[in-house]
Length: 212
Ligand SMILES: Cc1ncc(COP(=O)(O)OP(=O)(O)O)c(N)n1
Ligand SMILES: Cc1nc(C(=O)O)sc1CCOP(=O)(O)O
Ligand SMILES: [Mg+2]
Image 1: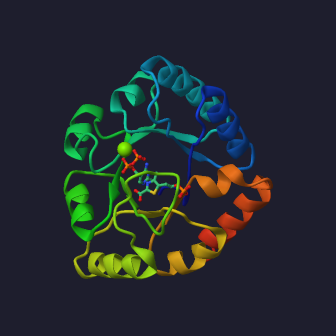
Image 2: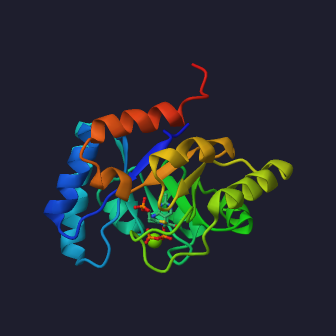
């Protein structure tokens, strides 16, 4: 089963991205999604190669945002695809069964579609407003997660759900109580000046009800 915390990278340059990713890995993140929007193919490829190398060193999972072909080129562990990106079914046909494919959802119907198309996990959001992403889908709030997870249970739909969008430390316990699997975060980890402590606190809350 996938780890419960995914770090989504930030930074306007290759150097800033690598700096942020390196600090997150050092602090204990073991799953990185490289998100580097509106950049040249050359720079995005250079960053992806460097992130692949770093994640290997830290034994972390590495997935690429948006670009399946880049994920293939650098032998990443997988790709995250949004509702306007390549369709999950097409991605699965290209990548085969061994790679991770994550899909964005904003509704129960999005989740059902993704499950039918062999998606591995869902990024369900936004939880609340965030400046990290433009053109957000309608905000779900806590009640949105409760409603969607309830519908999933009633219809026996199973797939790991990651809450995303403006999540802070105090949101973790209430979010986990809805029945989701984990969280995907960018800003909270990127801006923290005590990342190790933060990731420890996040993991304590994320794994609070896991029996080992
Ligand atoms: C884990 C996770 N969930 C959702 C998203 C959003 O993907 P998308 O809608 O394609 O938006 P961009 O990230 O591409 O701007 C995500 N990246 N990760
Ligand atoms: C990349 C992304 N996708 C979202 C969605 O709702 O699909 S919200 C989001 C931004 C997540 O970053 P932060 O933790 O800084 O809010
Ligand atoms: Mg996308």
